[in-house]
Amino acid sequence: MIRAESLSKSFGKVQAVKDVSFHAADGRVTALLGPNGAGKSTSLRILSTVIKPDTGTAYVGEHEVSASRNQVLKAIGVLPHDAGLYGRLSARENIAYFGALHGLDKQSLASRIDTLIEELEMAEFADRRVAGFSQGQRIKVALARAIVHDPQHLLLDEPTNGLDVMATRALREIILSLKKQGRCVLFSSHIMQEVTNLCDDVIIIGDGEVKFEGTLAELQQGSGEADLEDAFIAKVGATE
Image (cartoon, rainbow, N blue to C red; front, top):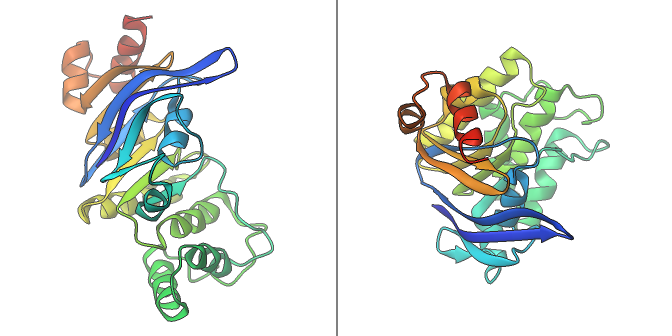
């Protein structure tokens, strides 16, 4: 489970998140929604230990993100908005590099990479340099890199952004497979159809504050809107 407790973070005079609390459970897919600038990425960056909150705390499993950074890094897999792959390395080499950083021995790492290449259907391009890959291919490599150390918790920042229909469908199946394995998956998105197809739970952030936390059904019932986009707008606008 991932828990955020009263997180606040400012950048100069801009307060990105204000007393934000939420949780994401194991074996479920949780969407983190909000307009641009709402505080989604800041929240994910705190959870992934990239930045520290000014106040409040967060936990990944049993580990507090500031006090137990190394343990948190072992427990999470992160797919950032910008995949940040090394273009001169092959897909296999990109994954191997991050596996080595996580301390996997050569034999275990080679076996793990072979498994991921098969599961993510990357055999066709696994040994090609990443430079020139399609967006869908890049996302697959970045996801494989994020889960090479077999983490329990996944943080995905707009994972379907820029993907075509087939790549989006493939990624959806991968995320659902991770859910069936009992993983905790927390991802941000602007695509309501993907939220509908993938998510069990929803967290809505607006103006740096949590506007809603609950299931999809609870969001629709509480807003009085059957359409998810309308329900989202109702919740974001309700307290503005």
